[in-house]
Length: 218
Image 1 (cartoon, rainbow, N blue to C red):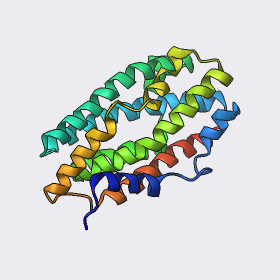
Image 2: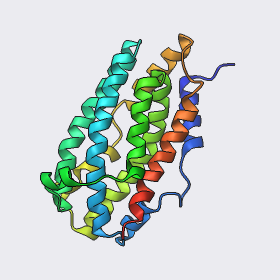
Image 3: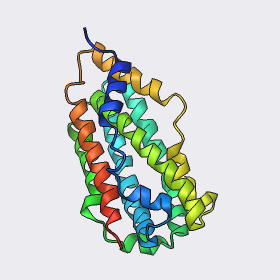
Image 4: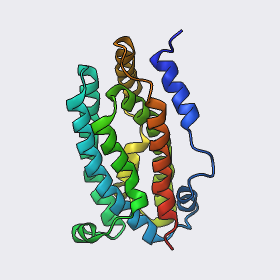
């Protein structure tokens, strides 16, 4: 019997959930022991990632055969635009102005995630990408909630400076239902799901690479 979209998403979230100690930076931020240089680098790396992911989601929207999938990715792209405004405030709170963001030299380990998402935008079946991305968002949102609380407690950031992480820590209303509709439409049309687990596994691996690359900053 073919699994439903809801069953596939639940299984993907369970299978792809990172281990407690796999992310080495977030616990340091939570304890207030991560250096401020790592916080600033987090802002600068995310600046490049958000701009890249915005374009990737637009490409996925344009490639989607199902209108629901196109709408889903368009909404994600719109969310990246909102996040970019909050990110600039986070960067400013971390001591980076626009010139510093332009001059920053990105780390390869941090940019693997958006590079792979860009590959998925060109090569992935959109309904598979939806499943992989939404499964990954669970871990990302949890990290953001922890970081937002720690920046306030240990680093003196105000609500404006933490807005980027607050934005992603709060689940989008109806987000799961929109994603499930796309995945189910793909299942009904005989498209997708074969590669979704692989896409999700690699996205989660690159997510951890991002954080752990920053954890090396002294």
